[in-house]
Image (tube, rainbow, N blue to C red; front, top):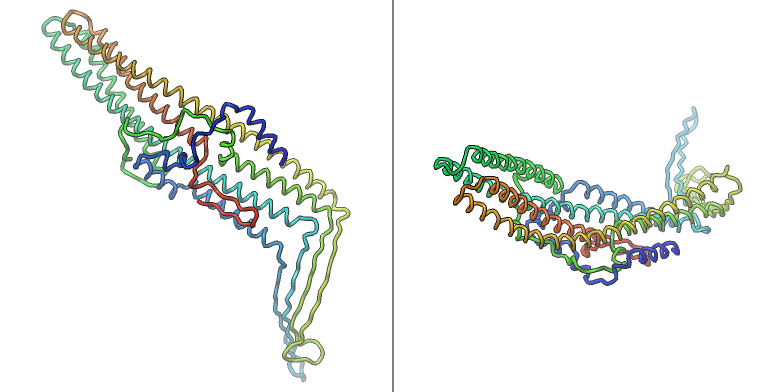
Length: 447
């Protein structure tokens, strides 16, 4: 446990920028973060139908069964059997004999082997439960990412089609100006080429949109003709992206907790390996009913027997020492994995906060860029219609405007993605955080 404390202190030094916690766990629960009703429906469907999450659920079921078996190992084992025999000798009556033995074997946990196995099984259960929560958190974030990508593509498609209309109008204006001698065929051809280029990009966007919809349907495990979604600008991720967070926030992440429980399990396995060097005390008892003793025929005679055995290992061909070395090495591996999980968690949280802040600032600048590009495009059209200026200025202004509008939509998605990454980096979905009750020997996981 001292190793765990040292790692937490080291991480606190590395990520000292996260000093003030400004949000409660409830505010980062997914239903409060993703308020879009259509996105909520998709997430709920995914949580019910996703194949990866279902597989993770079954892993928890297996770990729970192993934990129950480890707890029941403290109880004695009982076995019962029955056997009968018929002996037919010529000239003698048929002999009928039977035996109904009941045997009990009980291992007294002198060296703590059973306790160690129970602790290891409990830690493994919680590690599996946290791994399931990590899959769940990743699934929620993936569904949200695909959903907002569709929203972005929908807006890009709208802007592209609006640009197509503008380009077509420009072609018509240039053709009219050509007829009166104010423009030439080169300008008309350039305008028509620009229009066809935008039309081709529309087809590419439609293909990307369909591919993203199909990927989202795989995530939610349900087929739809199309995914209903909000319009751009009318949906957002409700999580504070300008605050800092305490280092303790990392303890709520499922990957960090899973690595911590995995380390605890390996610590318990080291104790189990050490227990193999100590004697084992086993109490065996048997009882039974039989009619093969003396002259008793029926009901049978009850036979009782009890044996105590104490076994001290002396030489096991080096297997016990090898098992101990292996257990210590695995404990060290688990410690390294926990260290890396903690450092990676801090890095992801820092990256998410930085991405949210910088993308928000970039959006402000991009809005100013779009406003300037729109003004330049309108002015260039007026100049072209009222002078002998070439179409090159209009084409340049139009291209700049389209690029600016598409860029601000992409920057908006980057900002949304930063918030989604922040939600995932915090890992504090309060409605689904497992609660451990180690004192009373129970394990409860809200799934």
